[in-house]
Length: 298
Ligand code: ATP
Image 1 (cartoon, rainbow, N blue to C red):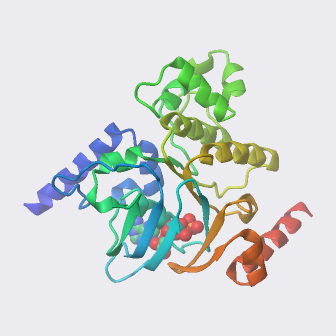
Image 2 (tube, helix red, strand yellow):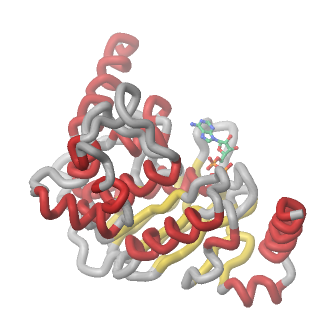
Image 3 (cartoon, rainbow, N blue to C red):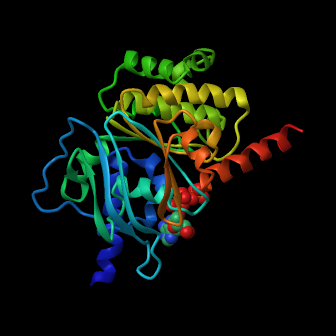
């Protein structure tokens, strides 16, 4: 019987997630892999946020029991702080984002938002409090206006325009013959990676969550586009608690703090300049990326 219920459970989970407008995160977090065992505790209260600080307390986690990915992570992100998460590929950066969004529960330890254990609050209230700008946004086969508006259920035209302005995509949309009514996606206008990311930024501005996870694109954008995107991402981060997963270190040198992850452990943390002085993993990654950049320009 359980064999029958598991797929049904999964379908229910997928349905609820789509209904909550989380398709985007689904793409980022490989929804189908998510553990359907993650359920609201009976009578779980809604998350109440006054000061949106985040605390990881001795968090252990593995997707499979025999392979641990995170080995006792302890860190804090204070309310309003922008913290960048860096580290080699496979270190566990996206896993941390998935746990924060509670697609999985830690195998030991706790994750707190404003002092409340996220495993003990309603998932819907948790997910309503967190905005995600994924590295590769999925667009609906609908108008560009709809794709922005679904960031918030009751948004009106002015709100959508303002969000588009904030995400620096308004001039682009206004130059289209059908403006916000332009069809996008597979059957419509194909948007570039940078344009899609701006749509995701506009959605997040509209959702206006106290906590934001930014997942920086791995693919290199040209440097002007990158500068423009960075400026809009900084706008999203302003006044919110922000966790920025970064692949290119040049984009996060201004973060309030940088957490350096290695094999699921916190190897170093501090400001860019402190970390360079330490001459450890961060400094090594920085030097390597600088050298790669020089090579690319040559
Ligand atoms: P990158 O910089 O390449 O995106 P990352 O630091 O974000 O890497 P994660 O995606 O968190 O790394 O992955 C950490 C480890 O967990 C990797 O070894 C990966 O193979 C493993 N992993 C990730 N997702 C799953 C999954 N759904 N099932 C099993 N293992 C997974």
